[in-house]
Image 1 (cartoon, protein in one colour):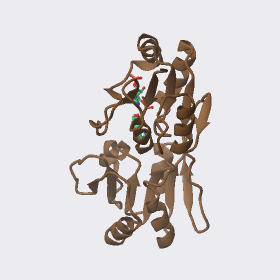
Image 2 (tube, protein in one colour):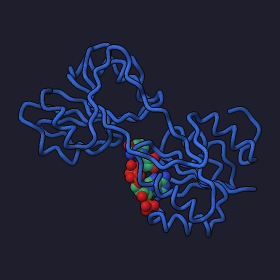
Image 3 (cartoon, helix red, strand yellow):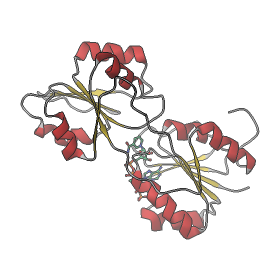
Image 4 (cartoon, helix red, strand yellow):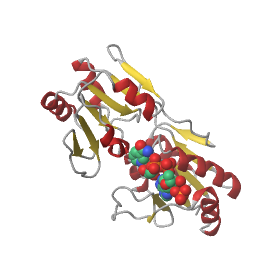
Length: 247
Ligand code: NAP
């Protein structure tokens, strides 16, 4: 049977991994939780760049790479595309569609941390929901701001910042309660797409709050691209990599 290497680290990737049998490999960078209840093999940690990944594909006789990494994990996606070409192995990708602004939204698009802090200058109580990067800038918080930073793992608070350790999915009611309690005046977000973390955008809309949105990085084209887990599982079924049971 064709052996699949699934590059993951997202909830969608885990859904695919749950459908893979023992022949296949689920790969994680090692930043989050490592599931211990999968039938497929799980490996953790980097491959050593595109060259290391090429060697891995060859030595492990991988027949198909699936890039189901996060849309902002641009390095591993680039490595997957390059290594697959070098090893003559097809690369399929799950490319989660971006969120689109709706009527009433006030999105302020930024390309990097410098633009992001400039866009935040008029505000006092931002909620950061784009991962750990703000934690490296806590000593740069302007005197008029108090930051709330939502991340996966706890981090010490400072006089002008608080960390919320939480993992999605986040519910609409939970987000409404959080926003009401903390009186955020702006939300900072990646355009991750998907339903797990979308509720914050709905609450920002309800409360008339701007969203400072970090643009998506460019990703390489893949041999086949899928917008939904179910479509990718259907394609895996047609090549015999997963069984015929329901999604
Ligand atoms: P990145 O910048 O694209 O990748 C950095 C390095 O981490 C890669 O060059 C690779 O190391 C290693 N790596 C990344 N994903 C891997 C995987 N699935 N298996 C093995 N090695 C992997 O990625 P990132 O933005 O730091 O994100 C790291 C992981 O967290 C990704 O797997 C991603 O799916 C997940 N994640 C990221 C975000 C985000 O906002 N960036 C959000 C949620 C989840 P080598 O070069 O040594 O192979």
